[in-house]
Length: 233
Image (cartoon, rainbow, N blue to C red; front, side, top):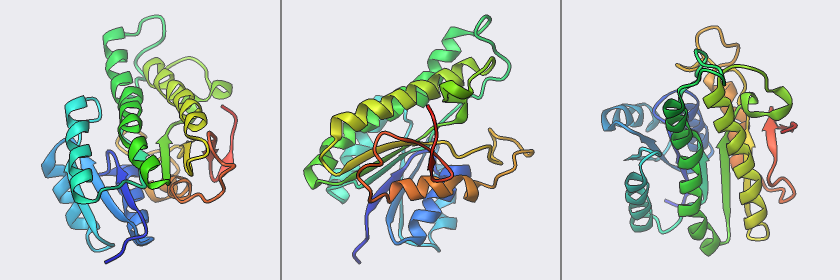
């Protein structure tokens, strides 16, 4: 069976990542989902398999060895990666302020929310360059937009702001290789992190991420989107 693209979605055993994986499967893509715990990922595969051909591999984005293992797996099994959705994220630290933040905790947040996507980009962009195609979507947040930022959630907000800067840097560095790198704010979504009062479903939050993963307009590189529209950093 020929797939449209090979996609890797991090943190995809639940929430927005699960919805993104489902959406990409429905569009005919081969999707590799990931989770830190294998039992969680295997459970998700059981549900997602009815929507298309889904694969699974464990991945802890804060662990470099874990990233190298999934790289080796993808090289061996598929020899390419076309779409990378950096969805895995952690620690919406409402209990902290910039003045009292536990910096060790903040460091852990940065490992997952910034350095994980950064290392994954460094790992898979050479593969994308080789095939002369790639789409990288960094799942960010309005909390990381400088024009929307205020007090609170220091670790999370700073990690997402830094992720947006990474998006810009990578986009400029891959320009001309048919590789597009963009950030997406999915909005306030009903997830374990977003809570039950959030107005959007995971499927609604995933919509623009899926759209960005399939972009054809090369001018839309290094942008920050919400609801398929460019927003200010």
